[in-house]
Image (cartoon, rainbow, N blue to C red; front, side, top):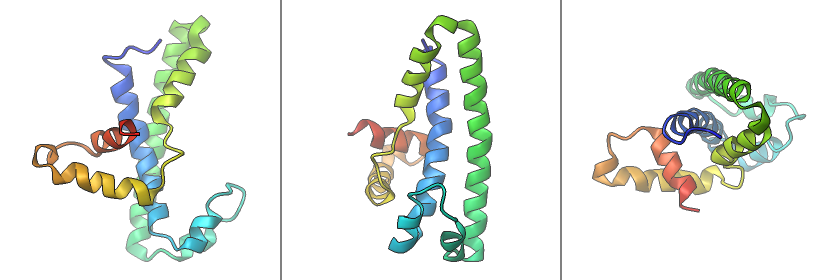
Length: 138
C-alpha cells in the first residue's frame, strides 16, 4: 500500500493541480460549451473559441502543468507496482480514490475554495490543500 506519510500527500497535490486546471477551464465556459466537454470524443474547438487569448494561455499553462504532474504520478505508481506487485491493483484503486473529484463541479468547488482562503490561517496554503479540504468535506 502507499505510504501515508510520503506518497499520498505528494500524489494528492499533483492530481489536485490537474483536476483544478480542468475545473477552472470548464468554469469559464458557457452552458453550451460545458455540455460539449462531457464527451471526450467531441471537438474541443467550440470550447476553445469561447476563451480569449489570456484565458487560452492560462488554460494551456494549467494543462501542461497537469501533464507534467501526471507524469510524476505515473512514476510513483510505477515504483509502487515494482515494489509491491501483489498489491498493484489495490494500491492503484486507493490512489484513484484519493483523486476522484468527478462528482464535484466547478460551480460547487470554487465557492468552497473561496471559503477556505477566507480563513486567515489559510492565506499562505497551497491550492492543493484547499482542494483537499473541499474533497474531504463531502
